[in-house]
Amino acid sequence: MTLYIFIILMLLFSFTDIMYLIIPNWIVLPAIIFGGVLTGHWISTVSMFCIGAYLFRKRLICGGDVKLMAMVGAFLGIWAIPAFILSKMLILWFRNITENQKGALPYAPFIGIACVPFLFL
Image (cartoon, rainbow, N blue to C red; front, side):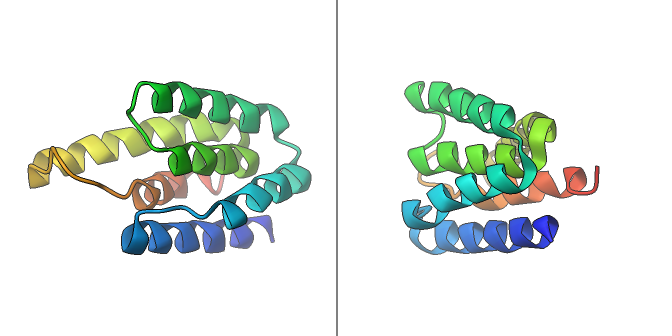
């Protein structure tokens, strides 16, 4: 059940990030709490939020991506850290292939793709 909720949320966030370059707070904040309550991975949630906040401060990711990674931490637990590293690798790979070094790039689809290998662990 938790797996299906996570997949639906990631598809929703990927769609909104691609279409509008935004991850709505009114969905992601309750999803963080809901995921934490369902799985009990509060330490991973806070850890991923802190890592994301640090990267946000360095201007490497946007605010919505920080909250999205906290949600991933809530659902995946400790596996959120390698998923985040994989997502950053996918983003760098995509930017190198398309030579898209400037401009807005939605990160939610990359985060969602990077989470797939860790969903079944």
